[in-house]
Amino acid sequence: MITQEHFKLLAAYNRWANARLYAAALDLSELSYRLHTGVYFGSLHGTLNHLLLTDRLWLKRLTGEGDLPNDLNAILYEDRIELTKARIAEDNRMIEVTGKYDETAKPMPASPSSLVVSRHRWICWPFKEAAQRQTSNN
Image (tube, rainbow, N blue to C red; front, side):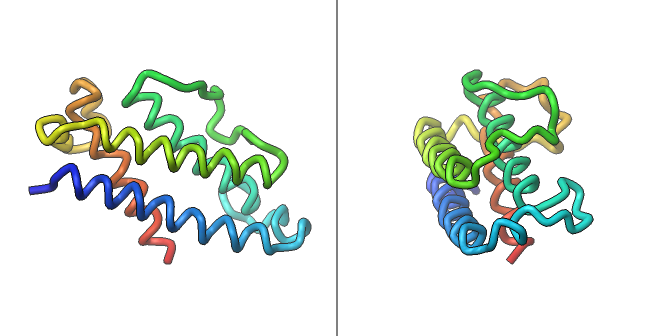
């Protein structure tokens, strides 16, 4: 059985992995960081903005709090220092949210399309997605 501690661990791992990713991104030259390499969101900058946006999307669905742009390609922050600060804040928010749910609040839906379930019943979905995204990129 997946416990609340498991999701706290996933949220902590997500914060740790993002800290490593952002440290590496901050070490890149501006040209390398913004270079369009043919990836879906154009550059590392576009991809990091998208990942922050998707985490905010999930947390908005779970908590009902937070603002979202209408476009999944939106650049939330042009400045990478500001983007890094926002990422840190969102990772801390994710850890805070995982600490608020009890063991009865986390059965996972069969798919993300099962959104008819109360948001408290599918709390685990975004944390599992974030962890899978991090481990598949290592």
